[in-house]
Length: 357
Image 1 (spheres, rainbow, N blue to C red):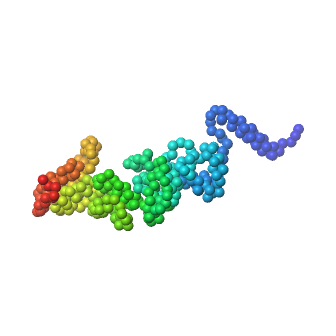
Image 2 (cartoon, rainbow, N blue to C red):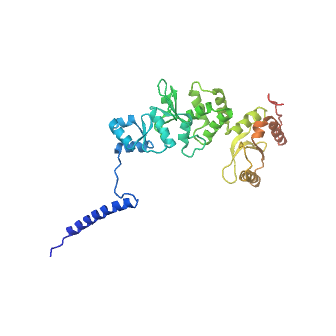
Image 3 (cartoon, rainbow, N blue to C red):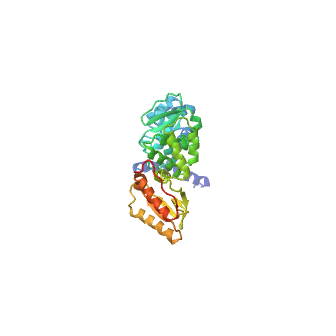
């Protein structure tokens, strides 16, 4: 009888594992399951790493820089390991590209380039942004004097200040928030929409009114410059929405009403900010610019806040004004607000504005 040694047990385990492995692989395939064997990535590690950094997008120029030749690229394209996204730009799958992949593709196509205007804001705000048309063209900014043609889904803009406004270190590269906000506001459909862009960026804490003021001073020619300068002055004063600016400009200033404090913090149960507060006269003005403010929850929140103010010792009268009172009938609203202020100690008189009947 042959003698047994520990080495024979090791050999038996190895052989058994090999037999099991050879039997499991075809069985897994037959059952439609995953192949248990590790599958090496068909692309070199350097290319894989770059694709991961750029949301699965890479340019021909970058591949050449990594030592990849055109014959190898053609092979990858033929095997669908890379697919053409734009001229000289590839993506690592065959399905529809995501917005970020389209953004990376546009930047790499026009390189050196950064996202501009609405595309820069879309990238800055992240995937939760709801007020951006992801189906629209990606806007990119290149240096002045370069010849870079628009492509389907890509619109190219030029500037002499590319190095000054570019943020090359972010993903995807984009221009500074302040310049993106000013670019979008300057071409908005009207002044109300332009102010909404400024107020939304400040409200989302993407920037501040003072930074926007410094950015517009550094700009050369820009559409709607006079309006934007005045609008930023109003933002600095605390008018943080379109309707708040309308009240400040068309009700309060235009009719000589006393200036109220804005965004006053005051709450009995967590932070609440009063839109306009006349502390001396005990009058608070709350402004609601939504087109529809009839929802039960909205109304309940307003009533709860008013009840809180009385229950916890706040004695101010609250005036709730909507779009109609502030934008549609500012002169009539000014007269009535003035009467409330006079009844609580203001000894002034409202003045007539050029639009008063």
